[in-house]
Image (cartoon, rainbow, N blue to C red; front, side, top):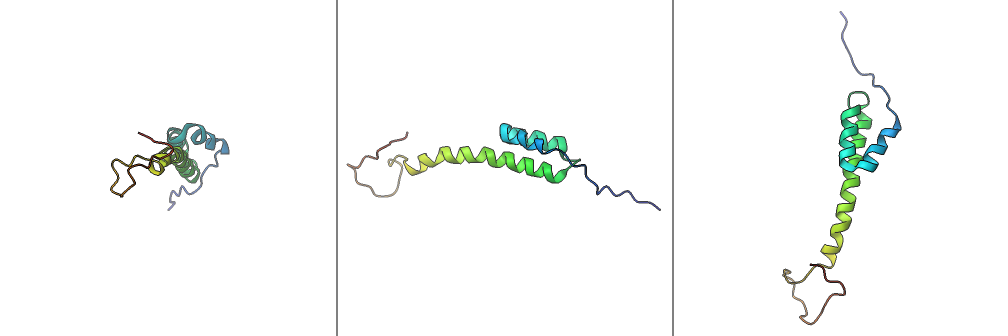
Length: 89
């Protein structure tokens, strides 16, 4: 009695990493759909790379708002004559 065991994977090119690098989460999703059956490990890495490369700019854009945000909505006591050097919002 023979059993079908599909443990062999087809190795895909490393050029698939370029899609999430230039396309972010959309490119990672496309590369994941394209190679998920042939090389599932590389497909997972491409998807993760797309998520990380999309999250980094979002975090970097939010940091100044957190660091130099306005004090009108803050519950921390502050000196009313102090004005931060850069005022956002």
